[in-house]
Amino acid sequence: MAKVLKKSGVREAADGVNVGADFYEELDRRAQELISRAVERAQENGRKTVKARDV
Image (cartoon, rainbow, N blue to C red):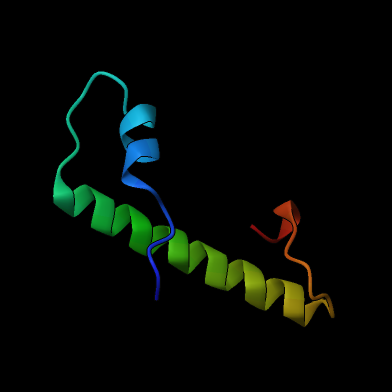
């Protein structure tokens, strides 16, 4: 699966600290997992649009 998060955005959000390579990988994996669950929930509710409430 494609990378979801941009490293520059993660670095900006983690203002004031360094970010290790393993952190990017794990954060991206969890974001993909969250997106997959939200897609499943939307589909279960008969929608093709993922909404905030699906998270």
